[in-house]
Length: 323
Image (tube, rainbow, N blue to C red; front, side):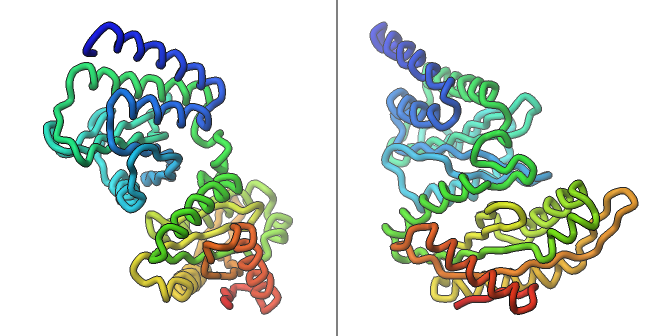
């Protein structure tokens, strides 16, 4: 720190930041973003909360602050999955030039639960010792938030069993996407509304435990066939929403998602569900796919796609319909 007054300011604001812990992650993140921007004076800051499934970790952008560019943050989202963290901090390129820094936050079991992305795109700089102290202190503060709030699957945006966005998380991500689409007309988005066929009867036949396993296998199968940055969320029960964003083939976005879902539906016929001595082969789903109009509210988009899904079920199931 440069002087006593700056040190005093730093610690006073640290106390204010810690006071936001009681409010959980939603109150903590805005306070943290403002805190970091002032002390590290970076151009852009992004918070990415992790959703882990097996060996794969994907990240949901939870907040940005400062002079950020959404396209760059979008690419950061993809790059984070490629980072091989050897420690808590990953810095690229070397200090002394414009830099990106990623801070890895883990829970008590060593799972990555969040990544803090810091960007300085305009200033060549070296990390001084006091700045590194701030970075490591931020990691410690973040860890305290997760200790207080519980693991990531207990946060209100994540389905605790399936480890994907729940309805609240879907609304949050959809509103963020609509806002971006209104600013950038080249972004085209398709929304798929899916419903597992005959799932009520499946539960009655095999029981809820096998039903829960089937849901998990269904979600994992879908995720394995989707692109890394696609959004998959649980709308409720056995209903799911897929959001497909395309920046290059926008005029075909509905066609591309429909064809992708049809291929997944065909392959899912071979899915094996086994629980003890209970064995079942194959699931299917019915769905509707629409192009998202950014001038509509997100509930209207859900309603339109859900109506197509209902028509698909009435038409014999295992069908994907579009307008």
